[in-house]
Image (cartoon, rainbow, N blue to C red; front, side, top):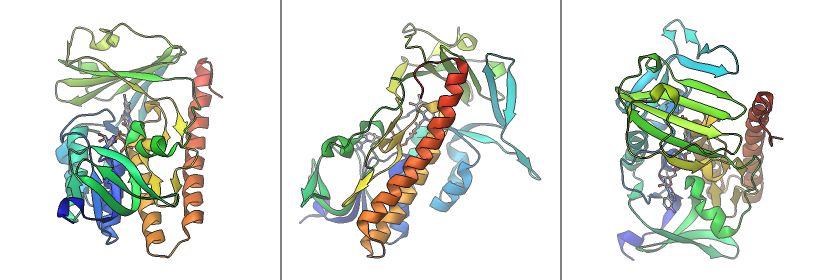
Amino acid sequence: MGARHSAADVAVVGGGPAGAAAAIACALRGLRVTLFERGASGRDSPGETLHPGIEPLLAQLGVGAGLAAVTGARHPGIWTEWGGPRKFEPFGADAGGPWRGFQVKRGEFDAMLRSRAQALGVVLRQPVAVGPPLLRDGAVCGLETDAGPVPARLVIDATGRSRWLGRALGIDSPASSPPLLARYGYVRGSCPQRDGAPLMAGDAAGWTWTALVRPDTYQWTHLALDGGKPAADWLPEELRGLLPLGRARGADVTWRLAAQPAGPGWFMVGDAAALLDPSSARGVMKALMSGMAAAHLGAAVLAGQAPAAQTALAYRDWLAAWFAADAARMGAFYRGLGAAGFA
Ligand SMILES: Cc1cc2nc3c(=O)[nH]c(=O)nc-3n(C[C@H](O)[C@H](O)[C@H](O)COP(=O)(O)OP(=O)(O)OC[C@H]3O[C@@H](n4cnc5c(N)ncnc54)[C@H](O)[C@@H]3O)c2cc1C
């Protein structure tokens, strides 16, 4: 069997924050890991605003020192405007001064995590086309790729909203919000009022996020809560007149939680397991944490230190509690704004 087909202890599918974190955490536990990413390196994706609390997690993964190099701007808090006067919400402060969040360049951020994984011995297959999972006696035991089958003792699905494994196994991931489509885009130019900190503004019809992501470049996201669809060339008011960089894009961010996020030989992590709309502002942090948690639990199962079935249930309960708390908080907030359809 050639190197391109060699077996792995762990096969991680999806090289975003969740998959890269899972790969790093497995490699740190001495496991042989192969990471499969279908996209080309450096591709930008949304999810660029990170709370200052991300730093300890990145330090644990061994990439804390690299964060500055992939950061395009920093901010000490967020402006909010919800049917009342605009107000500034700082992250906090300590003796060293105000805590500041990060606007990372996501293509570079994800590549930094994958490089760290490679430095720990993870084999990175990118770009690669992944086929269906390999199954034996109801357990997942590897996956098909364009270079042939890859046996693995543990498969981790970190494919984000495409939910590769969940779809292949027919695992339900029911919607727990009305259908939500986020539209987002980038503009170049100058908007001095947005240079100090991002703005989250909204009402019952929806919310709009605007942020400086790097010098001269701003990102916006708009989420309609009333099912409305803005015109293709729509821009937030404060960014009108600036130069759009490409076309606005859309992402389905309907809230979903996988009914079964782990099972025999497999885990789902990040957005593949639990998805909330970006107003939660914690998607990347949760992706890192669930990737690290799955690696920790999966390694214990592989080492015979934890029973597989109970470990899968514990992971499911942990994710579900987290999801329920966030969904309750966000639902109450949206209901308070007058939006319909949030339980
Ligand atoms: C408009 C918008 C704005 C957002 N803003 C923020 C924000 O400001 N802060 C924040 O924390 N979060 C934000 N989020 C959420 C954040 O982007 C996600 O929660 C986070 O990226 C999830 O990480 P992940 O690794 O689970 O998935 P992803 O980042 O989606 O990574 C999945 C990876 O898997 C790869 N992949 C998919 N299918 C396959 C396959 N079949 N084979 C191989 N590889 C595959 C993809 O190419 C990708 O690299 C935002 C989301 C949206 C849509």
